[in-house]
Length: 104
Image (tube, rainbow, N blue to C red; front, side):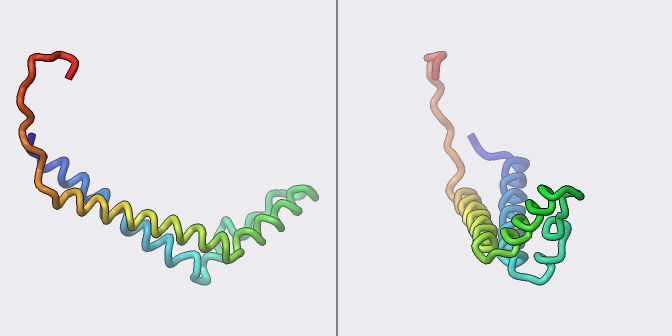
């Protein structure tokens, strides 16, 4: 079975998407925009509980540990994209011999 052009294109686009997402997740948490976006300025409402949660949320959001975890997800995305590209470069699957067994 030879891979079709559509299958190859889909795998290539997936690899490009994973690579771009990985680069974004590695770089963006360490930029100034990370602390001024909508998620970082979450207020949660007017109640005391929401205000307390918003304080904890803000502290966790700007924490270097959380930023490092997000960057780690970026590394995982780049790893996935490289795996996909290397798997595409392998030789295409060969024809499987037809068998009479209906369960295979």
